[in-house]
Amino acid sequence: MLSNAIRRVPRVFSVARRAMSTVEESSSMSLNFNLPHESIYSDAKVAQVIVPGVAGEYGVTADHVPVVAQMKAGVLQILHEGVAEPEKYFVAGGFSITHPNSVTDISCPEAVRLDDIDSAAVTSAFEEAKSKFSNAESGSVAQAEAQIDMDVNRSMGAALGLTLV
Amino acid sequence: MYVERVMGQAVAARGMATEKQIFNQIQSTKNISKITSSMKMVSAAKLKGDEQRLSLADAFNKWTTPLTGEPVLLEGATYDELPQKTLIVPMTSDKGLCGGINSFITRGTRDIVAKVTADGKECDVVVVGDKGRGQMKRLLAGKIIRSATEVQSPGSFTLASALSSELIAAGAMNYDAVMIVYNSFVNAAVYEQKYKLIKPYVIEGEEESMLEYEFEPDTKSEVMVDLYEYLLTSQIFHSFMDAAASEQSSRMTAMENASKNAGELIDSLTLKYNRARQARITTELIEIISGAAALED
Image (cartoon, rainbow over all chains, first blue to last red; front, side, top):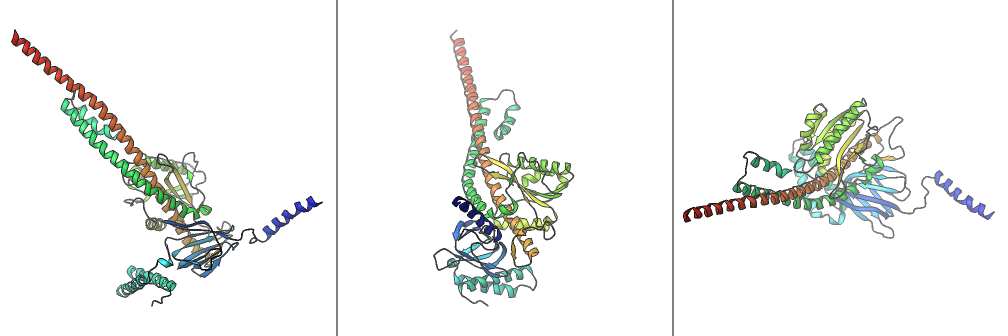
């Protein structure tokens, strides 16, 4: 009789697991954060990741709904378990894919630690891009490139707390 | 093999090579052996860097595996799963003196094209690398729609990005699959030929891809197009790194064999030289002795 009860219990759990796709045993998510020239995190257990999506920022925790998100140039925040301050990276675009098994793959062509960005260099790069933008002829490739430069530097500045116009 | 081709010309012309000629042969063989052994050491050093880049590229490219599957070995492949219209992208090198890597890729591509044509399917080829272009120009002239040469080995993400934009401009999304054929590095002595099949995403209908995922932003079709290009770039980047590491290991092996052959040739030529020298000395001695004997009498 007792053995019957024990046998029944695991089946109940598995039914619950199938019914609610988000209920699982894991409490942390696995993060893969890779650049072409550096592997920053591989199968790392983190508490939460805040992704700068094109449509807006959103946070990913364990058991998040599967998402494919295109990232814009912005700040990626990684919250480790038991650490209050998030680790911040400035990413230059890329994709973030959260799989059904709480594994998130974040892949970007380039990303830097926010601490490694020099605000003076960002300001001067922004000014340079701004002058190139005004000097280039309207609608040319040079102007488009200068526009991209300006936008990226502006977001970098915003991440550091500077307002660049 | 490289050494003998050079040497053969010198000996074949005359019947009996003189001592001086053999000596010249030995000198040039020694020079060649110096070059090949230094090339081997350069390749060994470059291989270390390429292997490291490859392991980073492996980690970087891991996100594509759930989406496109693992690369498949060319050996024993039946190519039955190829769709109706395929764009084949073989990756070869620009420089030579690298062993058999380019011949393997050319042969593999030729087999794939033959199988595809026999099955009544279509394919086109975009060749990367000068050596491959030269070899395939004869065999697959009609199929080659683009070629990319003077690709700075080992390549970078920017380069892979440029190549994938070119492929998409050449109409990659109109094909049912893009097939990258490349050499994959196993270790310093072994490399294998592999291919990756990358299919564009089906936006809607019964076979809609990635149904279980939500998309940010909501315009799934736009995000899929960008995702496809990024996926293609990531895969091309990984193949670049793999092919570069294979090229260096192959060059290292080829140069080591060349140095070994040169060493053996130098040994046999030295024996020949010594025999010629001894024959000359013996002849001179005989002349002197017979001359002296004649004077005595």
